[in-house]
Image (cartoon, rainbow, N blue to C red; front, side, top):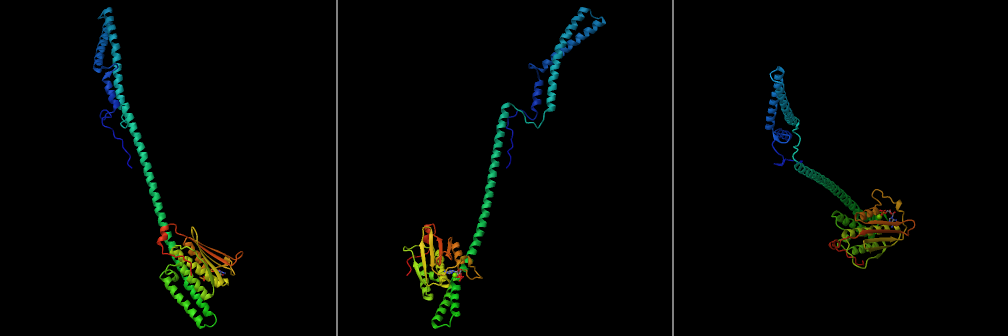
Length: 384
Ligand SMILES: Nc1ncnc2c1ncn2[C@@H]1O[C@H](COP(=O)(O)OP(=O)(O)OP(=O)(O)O)[C@@H](O)[C@H]1O
Ligand SMILES: [Mg+2]
């Protein structure tokens, strides 16, 4: 910011460049004391000097004997009488000239012209205003600089957030892919391997083996095309869970009591997929680990979300002792990750103090009603 320069106001300061004090002194030198012109004083001085000279001459003549005493005394008195005002006038004029010369020699050209009183106060007011303006502009520029700094910080934070979001999204996509593979292909191949490892295959078990392999093939294609689970192709969660239940009963003899909401509830597709994978993993765990042939599966619609539960009264397990090993025993961990990515959580109750195992998934429901209307319809009719 360019500082304001005070420029003299035309007509404000009298006269041209000559120092005012010298000018005033010179003007004063033209007048003496009561204001008589200098010329008058000079004439007086000359007259008095002449009178004094006459007096002195009379004294000299008297001393030489050229004048008698009374005439000489008269001349002396007259001369002395004239000398007194002459000296006074000379003294005054000399004093004036001396003052003028002193003023000329001591005037500092850098001094601001003093000027008359009102002019000075106007300048002071102007100066104060300028300083206030300067301060205001400085404060304004400081505020602007601070605002730009904050904007830069916010922009940097936004970029960081974006990068973090991209990384999280990539991680999420990888996690979902892993979960998808685990929940589908891995399970079908595991069951197929179990059949092959068992007693010699009969025609029915061969057909089951073929089913597992066919499932695996279908699931791999579904994962590759990143589509929803085959059972959820038409977007009906109730139908998909119903189909899963029938499948588990037919293949493994597991009876599942299903508790489903009476009223239809729209559920976002992502949440529907997560809920379906939860039922699938939890019920397959019952088949694989619980050593029972019965389980309960429930879907509850809560004010703030949806809750899916699977409960068996089987052997139970100590959660702290479960360790995933090179890609094995990762089902519960992946479920937990799925829940986290959807903004929900997974609770596991098993082991000491519990009868069997209870798995519970909670997912939040979309807050905005328009989000509910835009998602594919997830009919929640009671499964057959
Ligand atoms: N309903 C259950 N009853 C008894 N034990 C269970 C039950 N569910 C899980 N477990 C125990 O918890 C462990 C971890 O389960 P998790 O689903 O994570 O892995 P997994 O089923 O062994 O393998 P996968 O990775 O194929 O799912 C199981 O190995 C089992 O010991
Ligand atoms: Mg499992």
